[in-house]
Image (cartoon, rainbow, N blue to C red; front, side):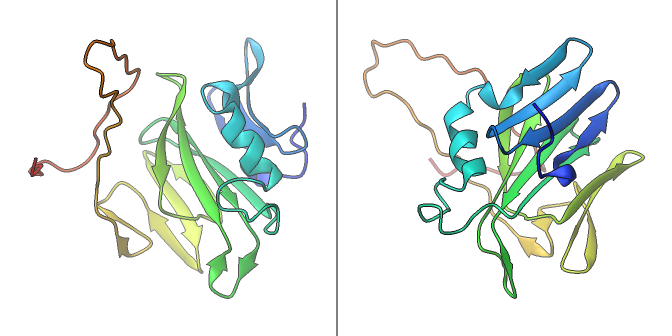
Length: 180
């Protein structure tokens, strides 16, 4: 394994180092116990397709991956990874930004922002985009754009089958409600 062509995917927290190897279509963690393919934690096919440019947002490889940006979010203690297509005057042709959480050994969140750089300073995470620096975890906007929240439950309609979920988490402000 190696960092291949994505040096901006590199992030460090303590003795852990995170990076991608696009040549092998994997996301890796180097720590005291060696190299681990963290992309294989329930997301092997996803990262194989996304890092090769054949994912959902890439039209049969017509938008090759241009940038893979990584960073450590000290606030949530997550590795943030953004896979991005080529940039145009309107932004990237495609992007997927996700979070890896060590406490559950899984990819727990998908975000609606496309950073060009991510850094944590003190107890805060910052990202850079369109000549602006943004501090995260201050509210419900990313890059000055508000995003609504939604929850989609995927359940087996057969009630006799036992369902197991490894992760269910809510992070946000109090005072929200659900209509049904």
